[in-house]
Image (cartoon, rainbow, N blue to C red):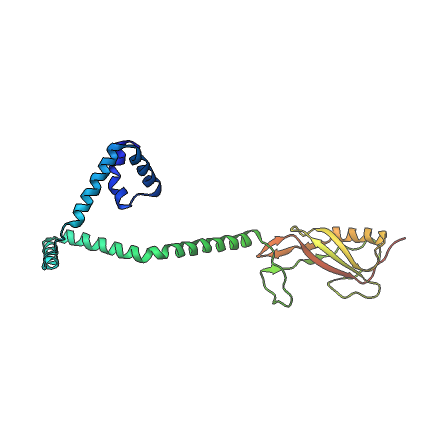
Length: 236
């Protein structure tokens, strides 16, 4: 630092008002600069003289005089100046009231927007809802179901019930349906699993019609339909 900058900070150095880094810089400069050291000594003498000076008490009627002057100034103001003063005061009061509420209100708006975004995503894209045991049926999620079952390629009748009970010689199958109502996979839960049965079963499921799982009125993949075949005829 130059001597000019150091001398501007000497009063603050004496009062201890300088930050730690500036205080150390001034102290190091004064130790090596005789001119600034002499200036600092003059400030010390002046501070000592001012500390011994007698304090003058303010007049007893000073507070009353200030109030009277303020009242006269208010009375001399026009309607425009008074309106501006009251507007400024109202603005200050509203700011003091609303500023502490700004952060909670902003958080509430952000939370509401996040909830709206999640609900819009569920409604627009049809995210399937997980089933809860013993819950009441709603229209939000409708499971997939069989519309029309294709016959086996063998003569004779064949009865199939959706979700029916299986007998001793029944075939219980779980079909997985996509959003277009097409079978994409299946699992034999009970019954014969030989190659001939699987071939006939695949033909039946591929040519059958299913209604896909519905979520908020939109078809979604992952629907499961359980079919029970009460009679199976395999042509050897």
